[in-house]
Image 1 (tube, rainbow, N blue to C red):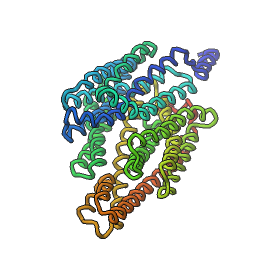
Image 2 (image 1 turned 90 degrees about the vertical axis):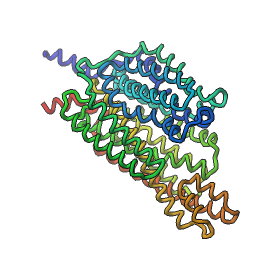
Image 3 (image 1 turned 30 degrees about the horizontal axis):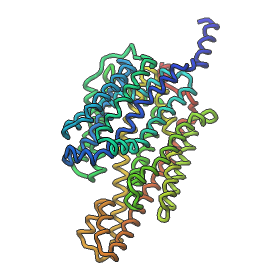
Image 4 (image 1 turned 180 degrees about the vertical axis):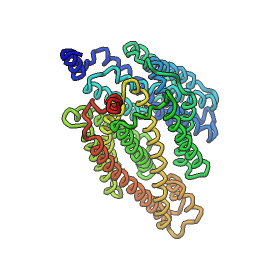
Length: 527
């Protein structure tokens, strides 16, 4: 190549094409399915009482109604991420949104519990098509690093907004219509997306080979077994069956990894993990969600059961942390104009650790306002890590693998959330029970004490049934014990945040915004 040709190539690389109005309007279309997915679970939780009256599901059917969609979404993510690269990201995204709209419309008019479970399962598969396709398409739409960073932030802000508004939207729909409206509202969102889908690029990997069906089965069994086992442990405690399910998932996962190393067309390209920007960012997101998801669950339980807030009051208060999470997400691309991503991520985590320490130190005397302030600081500080970590994960691999990278991110965050709820929930209950055992008033019966040990909700009921003097003393013991459990939980949160901040600075301090070391450059070094 001549010097003029080399200079021209260098100029193109240094000044990538900036997005036009078409890409920005396409981004608006992309956030619609993301918002739709994030509102789904919050709305469903509020619809459950009405569904119970109409369909009279058993306790087992109720659990499958709530969790089957999530299980299948996480289980199929790796498959759909690779399929998106192979058949086309826009094609799979449109297919997923159409399936989601149809399944929602039919689910809204379910006449039996099993019918609703079936279409909840279809919604889970459709969500697995949508999530990696929507995120990876951003890589094809926004080539300029700064614009790509903004697009990632907008995408994640839509998810945060949906998660925050989901319960409110669901409550309004159930109150003014019927429980089926929680599903039916997805149909106009899906139709609106289809109008803007023509503005999205039609990228696919022309060199992609066949889909390894054995790897598909192994990944599905491995991920679903671990997620199912962890969620059941979190809800029902340690049981041989649930522990065995997790162990089975781990064993199958090892078999899956070994197969990926030997097949010609792996479902998951393990070379991605050799890139620090990918592997370290993925680990950081998993660790943050591991402690943040579980502690947030404990916190919401505390403000309702211990502080006595109604679900509506709690939901309104929790809009503040969600709003600050959106602010932190949108702040991330601004921060990286002056500092490298690792330092922006670390700074946010230090701020989040400060919020956790505020809760830990003031918990016994704190009211709802102070506690919400602490959680809001945590959500604000965590947001840049989630945004910049997602950006590094997707941009650190070749465009041909960005669908798989996005899917791996979703699997990692899903595992982190499930492990976090199981780990933090189990730890909190262990501390709570150990403390309560030492503070139960001497006049309380063994049966009442045993019931109080089951959960904080059951304990409050027990205290209310005791005579006034014993009830007040028992309630004080319950609240003190649960407060100690949450203080221990948020201490761990602060320590993990500080640990992750050190890790990202140590491993990613050389990574510049928009130019992480990817697979292509590593292959050149290997060659």
